[in-house]
Image 1 (tube, rainbow, N blue to C red):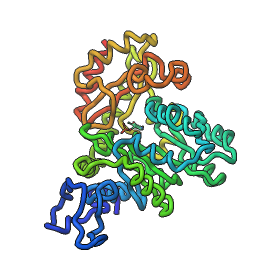
Image 2: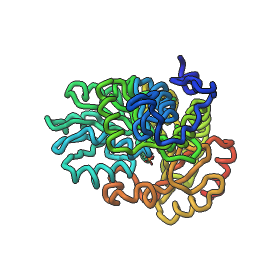
Image 3: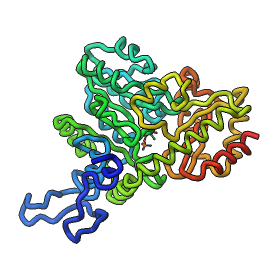
Image 4: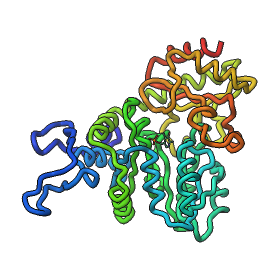
Length: 379
Ligand SMILES: *Cc1c(COP(=O)(O)O)cnc(C)c1O
């Protein structure tokens, strides 16, 4: 099955009770048993729920994996991956990382004796330098948030396999429409389904997809034992979102390109970060592992002035000033004071998250309206 068909049908069967084409929202915590242990596959909704199971099958299908797991948020999904580790284990992670992931690693898991190394992964040799016998996991985010660096997943996989460590990829920005980490050699793919998979800014959810059965077993155990699951209503919404993922992504990419090119030629704009530009430092890697370049763009205004950047995001009318990304509507954010405020200024400036950086999640409105909106805000 090709991707566009999988987005709609992958892993799905009509509901056995009445043939409902969309799975019902099984808003139940428990399931009747005829005799102790005599049930129809479902006992308790932390462990399993039919609506969540339908979503998890769809997730596995679109990421070309064998097992999907849905969680109450993207961070809950990452939390589950970290619980595969033991005190003393080490993780090598991308240095420009979603702020919440950085916070989870450094403020929660460091406390439990896990050591993190944050490296610039544009040069994959930087990863190998940090590997030692305690290394258990390589954590990759690509494209990175918000600097839009691209990490070579296949090259990371070669290193991970050579040293027998797990490779996990946060695929939130790209989505499986643009890139499929498992097919490039990753062991675990992670999503904040809050973003493009849900696609309508109406739900918070996380997901993991893996191929390996034994790894899936360990993650299912953690999902049930720690209990950070999502509810049936949210499962339904994300499943519905996935059904239009390919169409939305196509338009996000078209609009992203139009906006990126407009900004690049704007006299008030100093620099635009978008992997589709041929002079983007990782453009060739992006071309080789992504189908297109997506709708996430960051840019810096001329003069690198904090106040000016703030006034630009305040003046936008079609773009909404808000955290998050990946919905049908265009959003603008100021990472230094919003999504990345939890990363110390010194740390974030090392990776380029300066005070005047603006991040856009380009939606699927008419590109001309988006460009006009940016024009008036930058004027
Ligand atoms: C939003 C986001 C997360 C966290 O997901 P939540 O659903 O907000 O918990 C992780 N990684 C990336 C790249 C994100 O954009």
